[in-house]
Image 1 (cartoon, one colour):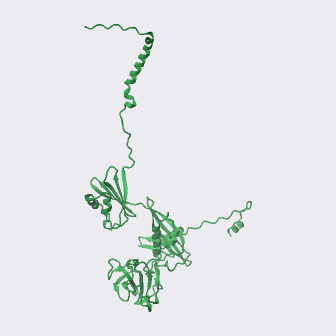
Image 2 (image 1 turned 90 degrees about the horizontal axis):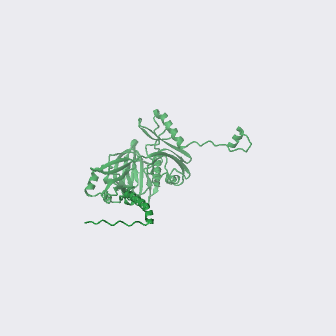
Image 3 (image 1 turned 135 degrees about the vertical axis):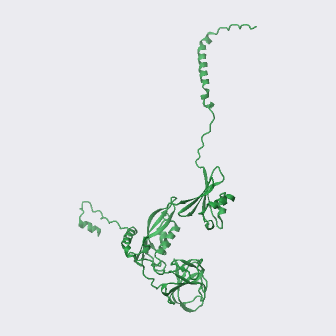
Length: 446
């Protein structure tokens, strides 16, 4: 049996007046609690988004001396079957002829330990990319887009052509190794005209117009010589490059259109020093006076020796008479040349082989009767020794008559760039108030 509850006692007057306020507060609290899902501390916890700025790790490796391709790739993590697959795909990579110092660029995902891309510079013009795909390694060849600019260099020769170029050209224009290439190229252009070790006097000036190549990475290298001027004892010698593919004409010509190429080079070595001239001399080993039927050129051991003209090999090997290792060539018009004291012969050189002018046939040595590394060079006409430094090497073949006008246009264009006209000299300002008259301007110019 449930007994009814006794009635509640009446509220005090103060509580009766506060009841409406309390009810309002409770109602407001209920509304706030109903919206508790919107409170920040009640929201689901979420992580901040991850922003990947570098998904790949890249590193370089250089091929060391006496190392093979497998050594470099092993340091990049390419070994075993992966290495075999790499070799099978890299058909453009000359595996057996890789030079020390070759740089390999490796790339891999930061979340992976396996390399997925290898880049190597095959030449200044090509890059090889090896990319790992779904079916294995794939080869990609990329041409390097070099931009061509023309560079004009002028200076004075005090000691050597290379030193003059080194002083005239800053590293920002051409690196040192490229300046050396420019010096060799100029020597090649004037190989029949100027001996830069004998003909040049201190103070002789030169000007050369050449091409400079620049890669997207900022690399700079020498391209080719377009025109040049060398003053030898105050006499200018010009060279302008002219080419016509249809007529098969290409080479350097002087201002009159005559080819700078001659039948014979002035010397079988570049940048040589004459150590013993043609004529009678006291032999340093035999200690007696005897005829010296050639010219000796002092050069470093192993310096390449060039054929001074087109010809045929009629002797190659050890020779009697103190020549040591010697090569003899037969040329047109009953002329023969000999090259003695060689350390070695060019690979594959044999009797009866035809060689071209400028082709390397051997290397400087000190075999036979020799006190040090040098080249003994003889020039024989109908079997008689002749001084090669006094022999007329012939005149250059001129530009074909049908191309004279074309050559003149090319020559004039190159000459303007080689020797740009000087801007006209402006007259000095006259005193204030004095009028500009023809007589006053002429007087200022004088």
